[in-house]
Image 1 (cartoon, one colour):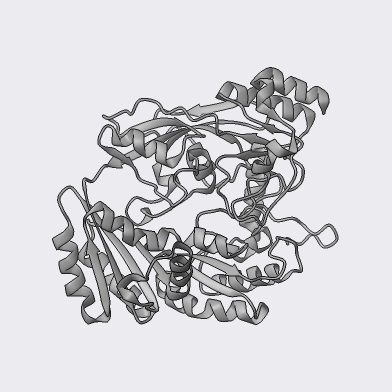
Image 2 (cartoon, one colour):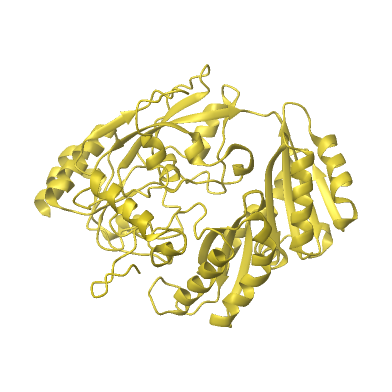
Length: 471
Protein backbone atom coordinates (compact mmCIF):
# COMPACT_ATOMS: atom_id res chain seq x y z
CA UNK A 1 0.00 0.00 0.00
CA UNK A 2 2.87 2.40 0.74
CA UNK A 3 4.25 1.96 -2.78
CA UNK A 4 0.77 2.55 -4.20
CA UNK A 5 0.33 5.72 -2.14
CA UNK A 6 3.68 7.00 -3.40
CA UNK A 7 2.66 6.34 -7.01
CA UNK A 8 -0.69 8.07 -6.47
CA UNK A 9 1.06 11.07 -4.91
CA UNK A 10 3.32 11.26 -7.97
CA UNK A 11 0.18 11.69 -10.09
CA UNK A 12 -1.96 14.09 -8.04
CA UNK A 13 0.57 15.59 -5.61
CA UNK A 14 1.18 14.55 -2.00
CA UNK A 15 -1.35 17.04 -0.61
CA UNK A 16 -4.12 15.33 -2.56
CA UNK A 17 -3.58 11.83 -1.19
CA UNK A 18 -5.20 11.88 2.25
CA UNK A 19 -4.58 9.13 4.79
CA UNK A 20 -4.86 10.96 8.12
CA UNK A 21 -8.21 9.92 9.70
CA UNK A 22 -8.92 13.53 10.64
CA UNK A 23 -8.62 14.51 6.97
CA UNK A 24 -10.49 11.54 5.51
CA UNK A 25 -13.40 11.58 7.99
CA UNK A 26 -15.63 13.92 5.97
CA UNK A 27 -15.36 11.58 2.96
CA UNK A 28 -16.26 8.46 4.96
CA UNK A 29 -19.75 9.25 6.29
CA UNK A 30 -22.76 9.94 4.14
CA UNK A 31 -25.25 12.83 4.39
CA UNK A 32 -27.58 10.95 6.74
CA UNK A 33 -24.91 9.86 9.22
CA UNK A 34 -26.14 6.25 8.95
CA UNK A 35 -23.42 4.96 6.63
CA UNK A 36 -19.80 5.19 7.77
CA UNK A 37 -16.66 3.36 6.62
CA UNK A 38 -12.91 3.76 6.61
CA UNK A 39 -10.88 4.53 3.49
CA UNK A 40 -7.20 3.55 3.33
CA UNK A 41 -6.81 6.72 1.26
CA UNK A 42 -8.78 9.55 -0.31
CA UNK A 43 -7.33 10.57 -3.68
CA UNK A 44 -8.28 13.95 -5.17
CA UNK A 45 -7.31 14.19 -8.84
CA UNK A 46 -7.51 17.57 -10.54
CA UNK A 47 -8.11 16.58 -14.17
CA UNK A 48 -9.46 13.78 -16.32
CA UNK A 49 -5.88 12.80 -17.13
CA UNK A 50 -5.10 12.45 -13.45
CA UNK A 51 -8.28 10.40 -12.92
CA UNK A 52 -7.17 8.08 -15.73
CA UNK A 53 -3.70 7.65 -14.22
CA UNK A 54 -5.15 7.08 -10.75
CA UNK A 55 -7.60 4.46 -12.01
CA UNK A 56 -4.85 2.67 -13.95
CA UNK A 57 -2.77 2.40 -10.76
CA UNK A 58 -5.70 1.23 -8.63
CA UNK A 59 -6.77 -1.26 -11.29
CA UNK A 60 -3.26 -2.71 -11.49
CA UNK A 61 -3.18 -2.99 -7.68
CA UNK A 62 -6.64 -4.60 -7.59
CA UNK A 63 -7.97 -1.96 -5.20
CA UNK A 64 -11.70 -1.34 -5.05
CA UNK A 65 -12.78 2.27 -5.63
CA UNK A 66 -15.67 4.47 -4.55
CA UNK A 67 -16.04 7.53 -6.80
CA UNK A 68 -17.39 10.45 -4.79
CA UNK A 69 -18.85 13.84 -5.66
CA UNK A 70 -20.38 16.18 -3.10
CA UNK A 71 -21.25 13.26 -0.78
CA UNK A 72 -24.88 14.33 -0.51
CA UNK A 73 -26.28 10.83 -1.12
CA UNK A 74 -28.69 9.12 1.25
CA UNK A 75 -28.19 5.42 0.52
CA UNK A 76 -24.55 4.73 1.33
CA UNK A 77 -23.54 4.64 -2.33
CA UNK A 78 -20.63 7.07 -2.14
CA UNK A 79 -18.75 6.13 1.03
CA UNK A 80 -16.12 3.40 1.62
CA UNK A 81 -18.12 0.88 3.65
CA UNK A 82 -15.78 -1.99 2.74
CA UNK A 83 -12.40 -0.30 2.86
CA UNK A 84 -12.40 1.05 -0.68
CA UNK A 85 -10.16 3.88 -1.85
CA UNK A 86 -12.21 7.05 -2.30
CA UNK A 87 -11.59 8.95 -5.54
CA UNK A 88 -13.02 12.42 -4.92
CA UNK A 89 -13.99 14.42 -8.01
CA UNK A 90 -14.54 17.73 -6.24
CA UNK A 91 -11.46 19.37 -7.79
CA UNK A 92 -12.83 18.78 -11.29
CA UNK A 93 -14.99 21.86 -10.99
CA UNK A 94 -14.15 23.76 -14.19
CA UNK A 95 -17.05 25.23 -16.15
CA UNK A 96 -16.45 26.00 -19.82
CA UNK A 97 -17.87 29.02 -21.60
CA UNK A 98 -21.57 28.52 -22.23
CA UNK A 99 -22.43 27.61 -25.82
CA UNK A 100 -25.32 30.05 -26.18
CA UNK A 101 -26.26 28.92 -29.70
CA UNK A 102 -26.65 25.31 -28.58
CA UNK A 103 -27.99 26.15 -25.13
CA UNK A 104 -25.38 23.85 -23.58
CA UNK A 105 -22.31 23.94 -21.38
CA UNK A 106 -19.52 21.45 -20.63
CA UNK A 107 -18.62 21.21 -16.94
CA UNK A 108 -16.37 19.16 -14.72
CA UNK A 109 -17.88 16.44 -12.55
CA UNK A 110 -17.03 18.43 -9.42
CA UNK A 111 -18.97 21.56 -10.40
CA UNK A 112 -21.91 22.13 -8.09
CA UNK A 113 -25.47 22.59 -9.29
CA UNK A 114 -25.43 26.16 -7.97
CA UNK A 115 -22.20 27.01 -9.81
CA UNK A 116 -23.58 25.68 -13.10
CA UNK A 117 -26.76 27.69 -12.69
CA UNK A 118 -24.76 30.83 -11.89
CA UNK A 119 -22.70 30.38 -15.07
CA UNK A 120 -25.84 29.86 -17.13
CA UNK A 121 -27.49 32.91 -15.57
CA UNK A 122 -24.78 35.18 -16.93
CA UNK A 123 -26.05 34.53 -20.47
CA UNK A 124 -29.76 34.37 -19.68
CA UNK A 125 -30.02 30.59 -19.33
CA UNK A 126 -30.59 28.21 -16.40
CA UNK A 127 -29.71 24.70 -15.25
CA UNK A 128 -32.91 22.68 -15.36
CA UNK A 129 -32.21 20.57 -12.26
CA UNK A 130 -32.53 22.29 -8.90
CA UNK A 131 -32.41 20.71 -5.46
CA UNK A 132 -32.06 21.80 -1.85
CA UNK A 133 -28.42 20.60 -1.73
CA UNK A 134 -27.55 22.78 -4.75
CA UNK A 135 -24.51 24.33 -3.03
CA UNK A 136 -22.95 20.90 -2.34
CA UNK A 137 -24.34 18.42 -4.87
CA UNK A 138 -21.95 17.96 -7.81
CA UNK A 139 -22.83 17.31 -11.43
CA UNK A 140 -20.96 13.99 -11.54
CA UNK A 141 -22.86 12.66 -8.54
CA UNK A 142 -26.12 13.98 -9.91
CA UNK A 143 -25.53 12.10 -13.17
CA UNK A 144 -24.50 8.96 -11.27
CA UNK A 145 -27.81 8.94 -9.37
CA UNK A 146 -29.93 10.48 -12.14
CA UNK A 147 -31.05 13.18 -9.70
CA UNK A 148 -34.41 14.86 -10.28
CA UNK A 149 -35.09 17.67 -7.85
CA UNK A 150 -37.57 20.50 -7.63
CA UNK A 151 -38.12 21.19 -11.34
CA UNK A 152 -38.55 17.59 -12.51
CA UNK A 153 -42.17 18.43 -13.30
CA UNK A 154 -41.11 20.78 -16.11
CA UNK A 155 -37.63 19.77 -17.23
CA UNK A 156 -37.03 16.15 -16.23
CA UNK A 157 -34.03 14.71 -14.38
CA UNK A 158 -30.30 14.51 -15.06
CA UNK A 159 -30.57 11.95 -17.84
CA UNK A 160 -32.71 14.46 -19.76
CA UNK A 161 -30.13 17.22 -19.18
CA UNK A 162 -27.09 15.16 -20.20
CA UNK A 163 -26.12 15.70 -23.84
CA UNK A 164 -22.67 14.12 -23.62
CA UNK A 165 -20.20 12.64 -21.19
CA UNK A 166 -16.51 12.03 -20.58
CA UNK A 167 -15.66 9.16 -18.24
CA UNK A 168 -12.75 7.00 -17.16
CA UNK A 169 -13.15 3.22 -17.22
CA UNK A 170 -11.93 0.98 -14.42
CA UNK A 171 -8.60 0.30 -16.20
CA UNK A 172 -7.88 3.98 -16.86
CA UNK A 173 -9.10 4.23 -20.44
CA UNK A 174 -11.02 7.42 -21.25
CA UNK A 175 -14.27 7.50 -23.21
CA UNK A 176 -15.39 10.95 -24.33
CA UNK A 177 -18.39 12.04 -26.37
CA UNK A 178 -19.07 15.69 -25.59
CA UNK A 179 -20.33 17.08 -28.90
CA UNK A 180 -23.87 17.53 -27.63
CA UNK A 181 -25.50 17.06 -31.02
CA UNK A 182 -29.28 16.86 -30.92
CA UNK A 183 -29.22 14.11 -33.53
CA UNK A 184 -26.37 11.63 -33.24
CA UNK A 185 -27.28 8.03 -34.03
CA UNK A 186 -23.76 6.62 -34.03
CA UNK A 187 -24.22 3.81 -31.54
CA UNK A 188 -24.98 3.27 -27.90
CA UNK A 189 -25.95 6.21 -25.69
CA UNK A 190 -23.15 6.04 -23.11
CA UNK A 191 -24.33 9.21 -21.38
CA UNK A 192 -27.76 7.69 -20.87
CA UNK A 193 -26.20 4.45 -19.63
CA UNK A 194 -23.97 6.16 -17.08
CA UNK A 195 -26.86 8.27 -15.76
CA UNK A 196 -28.12 6.28 -12.79
CA UNK A 197 -25.22 3.81 -12.78
CA UNK A 198 -24.01 4.94 -9.32
CA UNK A 199 -20.32 4.80 -10.18
CA UNK A 200 -20.40 1.09 -10.96
CA UNK A 201 -19.49 1.39 -14.67
CA UNK A 202 -17.09 4.33 -15.00
CA UNK A 203 -15.93 7.49 -13.27
CA UNK A 204 -17.67 10.49 -14.80
CA UNK A 205 -15.18 13.37 -15.27
CA UNK A 206 -16.97 15.87 -17.53
CA UNK A 207 -20.57 16.35 -18.65
CA UNK A 208 -22.15 18.25 -21.53
CA UNK A 209 -25.33 19.72 -20.05
CA UNK A 210 -28.43 21.02 -21.76
CA UNK A 211 -29.60 24.36 -20.40
CA UNK A 212 -33.07 25.89 -20.38
CA UNK A 213 -34.34 29.46 -20.84
CA UNK A 214 -33.99 31.57 -17.72
CA UNK A 215 -37.51 32.70 -16.92
CA UNK A 216 -37.48 36.19 -15.48
CA UNK A 217 -40.74 36.05 -13.57
CA UNK A 218 -41.79 33.66 -10.82
CA UNK A 219 -44.74 33.37 -8.49
CA UNK A 220 -45.10 30.93 -5.61
CA UNK A 221 -48.32 29.78 -4.00
CA UNK A 222 -48.85 27.89 -0.74
CA UNK A 223 -52.19 26.21 -0.13
CA UNK A 224 -53.48 24.37 2.94
CA UNK A 225 -55.76 21.34 2.69
CA UNK A 226 -57.65 19.04 5.01
CA UNK A 227 -56.25 15.84 3.50
CA UNK A 228 -53.88 14.57 0.78
CA UNK A 229 -56.73 13.64 -1.58
CA UNK A 230 -57.91 17.24 -1.73
CA UNK A 231 -54.38 18.55 -2.29
CA UNK A 232 -53.59 16.07 -5.05
CA UNK A 233 -56.95 16.61 -6.75
CA UNK A 234 -56.20 20.33 -6.77
CA UNK A 235 -52.80 19.67 -8.30
CA UNK A 236 -54.35 17.68 -11.15
CA UNK A 237 -56.57 20.66 -11.91
CA UNK A 238 -53.72 23.16 -11.72
CA UNK A 239 -51.56 21.09 -14.07
CA UNK A 240 -54.37 20.99 -16.62
CA UNK A 241 -55.07 24.69 -16.23
CA UNK A 242 -51.39 25.77 -16.33
CA UNK A 243 -49.61 23.27 -18.63
CA UNK A 244 -46.95 25.77 -19.74
CA UNK A 245 -46.55 27.69 -16.50
CA UNK A 246 -46.24 25.28 -13.59
CA UNK A 247 -42.61 24.51 -12.70
CA UNK A 248 -42.72 23.00 -9.21
CA UNK A 249 -45.31 21.26 -7.04
CA UNK A 250 -44.22 20.28 -3.52
CA UNK A 251 -46.20 18.60 -0.77
CA UNK A 252 -45.60 18.42 2.98
CA UNK A 253 -47.63 17.55 6.06
CA UNK A 254 -48.30 18.98 9.50
CA UNK A 255 -45.80 16.69 11.30
CA UNK A 256 -42.92 17.88 9.16
CA UNK A 257 -43.97 21.51 9.34
CA UNK A 258 -44.12 21.31 13.13
CA UNK A 259 -40.48 20.21 13.12
CA UNK A 260 -39.50 23.01 10.73
CA UNK A 261 -41.23 25.72 12.74
CA UNK A 262 -39.70 24.49 15.98
CA UNK A 263 -36.25 24.23 14.46
CA UNK A 264 -36.32 27.68 12.84
CA UNK A 265 -38.35 29.39 15.56
CA UNK A 266 -40.96 30.68 13.10
CA UNK A 267 -44.77 30.56 13.15
CA UNK A 268 -46.63 28.23 10.81
CA UNK A 269 -48.24 29.69 7.71
CA UNK A 270 -51.69 31.14 8.24
CA UNK A 271 -51.13 31.04 12.02
CA UNK A 272 -51.96 27.34 12.46
CA UNK A 273 -50.95 23.82 11.48
CA UNK A 274 -53.10 22.40 8.68
CA UNK A 275 -52.95 18.68 7.80
CA UNK A 276 -51.49 19.06 4.27
CA UNK A 277 -49.74 21.78 2.29
CA UNK A 278 -49.21 22.12 -1.44
CA UNK A 279 -46.55 24.56 -2.65
CA UNK A 280 -46.69 25.41 -6.34
CA UNK A 281 -44.55 27.70 -8.43
CA UNK A 282 -45.21 29.16 -11.83
CA UNK A 283 -42.54 30.72 -14.04
CA UNK A 284 -42.70 32.55 -17.36
CA UNK A 285 -41.30 35.24 -19.58
CA UNK A 286 -43.97 37.58 -18.18
CA UNK A 287 -45.38 37.92 -14.68
CA UNK A 288 -47.47 34.79 -13.96
CA UNK A 289 -49.03 36.10 -10.73
CA UNK A 290 -52.48 36.90 -12.06
CA UNK A 291 -52.68 33.68 -14.06
CA UNK A 292 -51.62 31.55 -11.10
CA UNK A 293 -53.97 33.33 -8.72
CA UNK A 294 -56.87 32.98 -11.17
CA UNK A 295 -56.12 29.27 -11.59
CA UNK A 296 -56.09 28.77 -7.83
CA UNK A 297 -59.45 30.48 -7.47
CA UNK A 298 -60.96 28.60 -10.41
CA UNK A 299 -59.52 25.13 -9.74
CA UNK A 300 -59.01 25.00 -6.00
CA UNK A 301 -61.80 27.19 -4.72
CA UNK A 302 -63.07 26.32 -1.28
CA UNK A 303 -61.10 23.07 -1.10
CA UNK A 304 -58.18 25.04 0.37
CA UNK A 305 -59.16 26.68 3.66
CA UNK A 306 -56.14 28.99 3.44
CA UNK A 307 -53.59 30.10 0.89
CA UNK A 308 -51.07 32.72 -0.15
CA UNK A 309 -49.52 33.80 -3.43
CA UNK A 310 -46.18 35.65 -3.44
CA UNK A 311 -44.38 37.22 -6.38
CA UNK A 312 -41.65 39.19 -4.59
CA UNK A 313 -38.38 37.30 -3.92
CA UNK A 314 -38.58 37.74 -0.13
CA UNK A 315 -42.13 36.43 0.02
CA UNK A 316 -41.36 33.52 -2.26
CA UNK A 317 -38.30 32.61 -0.18
CA UNK A 318 -40.40 32.68 2.97
CA UNK A 319 -42.88 30.18 1.50
CA UNK A 320 -40.12 27.96 0.11
CA UNK A 321 -38.38 27.92 3.48
CA UNK A 322 -41.24 25.89 4.95
CA UNK A 323 -40.52 23.16 2.39
CA UNK A 324 -36.75 23.35 1.97
CA UNK A 325 -35.97 23.38 5.70
CA UNK A 326 -37.49 19.93 6.19
CA UNK A 327 -34.21 18.07 5.76
CA UNK A 328 -32.22 20.22 8.18
CA UNK A 329 -35.03 20.15 10.75
CA UNK A 330 -35.30 16.37 10.55
CA UNK A 331 -31.54 15.90 10.85
CA UNK A 332 -31.47 18.24 13.84
CA UNK A 333 -34.03 16.01 15.55
CA UNK A 334 -31.96 12.82 15.23
CA UNK A 335 -30.44 10.33 12.79
CA UNK A 336 -33.29 9.39 10.45
CA UNK A 337 -33.89 6.38 8.28
CA UNK A 338 -34.34 8.06 4.89
CA UNK A 339 -36.06 6.48 1.91
CA UNK A 340 -36.88 8.29 -1.33
CA UNK A 341 -39.58 6.51 -3.31
CA UNK A 342 -41.97 7.14 -6.18
CA UNK A 343 -45.67 6.32 -6.30
CA UNK A 344 -48.08 6.32 -9.24
CA UNK A 345 -50.26 9.42 -9.13
CA UNK A 346 -53.36 7.44 -8.19
CA UNK A 347 -51.58 5.70 -5.29
CA UNK A 348 -49.85 8.70 -3.71
CA UNK A 349 -52.58 9.73 -1.28
CA UNK A 350 -53.10 6.16 -0.12
CA UNK A 351 -49.39 5.73 0.51
CA UNK A 352 -49.22 8.93 2.57
CA UNK A 353 -52.04 7.54 4.72
CA UNK A 354 -50.67 4.00 5.04
CA UNK A 355 -46.93 4.61 5.49
CA UNK A 356 -47.02 5.80 9.14
CA UNK A 357 -49.08 2.76 10.13
CA UNK A 358 -46.71 0.41 8.27
CA UNK A 359 -43.76 1.96 10.12
CA UNK A 360 -45.61 1.85 13.44
CA UNK A 361 -46.16 -1.90 13.17
CA UNK A 362 -42.42 -2.60 13.18
CA UNK A 363 -41.17 0.45 15.13
CA UNK A 364 -43.90 1.57 17.54
CA UNK A 365 -41.89 4.47 18.99
CA UNK A 366 -40.82 5.85 15.60
CA UNK A 367 -41.99 9.09 14.03
CA UNK A 368 -42.70 9.18 10.30
CA UNK A 369 -42.16 12.47 8.44
CA UNK A 370 -43.26 12.59 4.80
CA UNK A 371 -42.72 15.26 2.16
CA UNK A 372 -41.71 15.42 -1.48
CA UNK A 373 -42.27 16.35 -5.08
CA UNK A 374 -45.99 15.91 -5.69
CA UNK A 375 -45.64 16.63 -9.40
CA UNK A 376 -43.71 13.41 -10.06
CA UNK A 377 -44.95 11.22 -7.19
CA UNK A 378 -41.65 11.35 -5.29
CA UNK A 379 -42.00 11.00 -1.51
CA UNK A 380 -39.12 11.44 0.92
CA UNK A 381 -39.84 9.09 3.82
CA UNK A 382 -37.98 10.07 6.99
CA UNK A 383 -38.31 7.93 10.10
CA UNK A 384 -37.03 9.30 13.41
CA UNK A 385 -36.73 7.51 16.72
CA UNK A 386 -35.66 4.17 15.24
CA UNK A 387 -33.62 1.97 17.57
CA UNK A 388 -30.20 1.38 15.97
CA UNK A 389 -30.76 3.54 12.86
CA UNK A 390 -27.62 2.19 11.16
CA UNK A 391 -27.74 -0.08 8.09
CA UNK A 392 -27.10 -3.45 9.74
CA UNK A 393 -29.46 -6.34 8.85
CA UNK A 394 -31.82 -7.54 11.55
CA UNK A 395 -32.22 -4.15 13.20
CA UNK A 396 -35.36 -2.10 13.66
CA UNK A 397 -34.10 0.16 10.88
CA UNK A 398 -33.98 -2.78 8.46
CA UNK A 399 -37.54 -3.70 9.45
CA UNK A 400 -38.68 -0.13 8.74
CA UNK A 401 -37.01 -0.19 5.33
CA UNK A 402 -38.60 -3.53 4.51
CA UNK A 403 -42.07 -2.37 5.55
CA UNK A 404 -41.92 0.89 3.58
CA UNK A 405 -40.33 -0.50 0.42
CA UNK A 406 -42.74 -3.44 0.24
CA UNK A 407 -45.64 -1.02 0.67
CA UNK A 408 -44.27 1.09 -2.19
CA UNK A 409 -43.77 -1.88 -4.50
CA UNK A 410 -47.19 -3.24 -3.62
CA UNK A 411 -48.73 0.00 -4.82
CA UNK A 412 -46.81 -0.15 -8.11
CA UNK A 413 -44.13 2.35 -7.13
CA UNK A 414 -40.35 2.52 -7.31
CA UNK A 415 -38.16 1.88 -4.27
CA UNK A 416 -35.75 4.58 -5.43
CA UNK A 417 -36.65 7.94 -6.89
CA UNK A 418 -33.50 10.07 -7.09
CA UNK A 419 -30.72 8.82 -4.81
CA UNK A 420 -30.21 5.40 -6.36
CA UNK A 421 -30.07 1.97 -4.76
CA UNK A 422 -26.66 2.36 -3.13
CA UNK A 423 -25.92 -0.05 -0.31
CA UNK A 424 -29.13 0.60 1.58
CA UNK A 425 -31.63 -0.79 -0.94
CA UNK A 426 -29.72 -3.66 -2.56
CA UNK A 427 -31.72 -6.38 -0.77
CA UNK A 428 -34.96 -4.95 -2.21
CA UNK A 429 -33.99 -4.34 -5.84
CA UNK A 430 -35.90 -7.49 -6.81
CA UNK A 431 -39.14 -5.73 -5.84
CA UNK A 432 -38.80 -3.54 -8.94
CA UNK A 433 -36.47 -5.49 -11.23
CA UNK A 434 -36.84 -9.03 -12.54
CA UNK A 435 -34.06 -11.65 -12.35
CA UNK A 436 -33.57 -11.24 -16.10
CA UNK A 437 -33.09 -7.48 -15.75
CA UNK A 438 -30.63 -7.92 -12.90
CA UNK A 439 -28.69 -10.44 -14.99
CA UNK A 440 -28.49 -7.85 -17.78
CA UNK A 441 -27.22 -5.28 -15.26
CA UNK A 442 -24.51 -7.74 -14.20
CA UNK A 443 -23.53 -8.38 -17.82
CA UNK A 444 -23.12 -4.65 -18.48
CA UNK A 445 -21.07 -4.32 -15.31
CA UNK A 446 -18.77 -7.20 -16.36
CA UNK A 447 -18.32 -5.70 -19.81
CA UNK A 448 -17.16 -2.31 -18.54
CA UNK A 449 -15.54 -3.37 -15.26
CA UNK A 450 -14.54 -7.04 -15.61
CA UNK A 451 -12.51 -7.06 -12.38
CA UNK A 452 -15.35 -5.47 -10.43
CA UNK A 453 -13.35 -2.71 -8.73
CA UNK A 454 -15.78 0.20 -9.32
CA UNK A 455 -18.16 0.65 -6.39
CA UNK A 456 -18.54 -3.14 -6.06
CA UNK A 457 -20.90 -3.05 -3.08
CA UNK A 458 -23.72 -0.89 -4.44
CA UNK A 459 -26.75 -1.35 -6.69
CA UNK A 460 -26.46 -5.02 -7.61
CA UNK A 461 -27.69 -7.33 -4.83
CA UNK A 462 -25.46 -9.96 -3.29
CA UNK A 463 -26.05 -13.62 -4.06
CA UNK A 464 -26.40 -15.96 -1.12
CA UNK A 465 -23.33 -18.21 -1.24
CA UNK A 466 -25.38 -21.22 -0.17
CA UNK A 467 -28.62 -20.82 -2.13
CA UNK A 468 -27.54 -18.57 -4.99
CA UNK A 469 -30.60 -16.38 -4.35
CA UNK A 470 -30.47 -12.60 -4.54
CA UNK A 471 -30.70 -10.81 -1.23
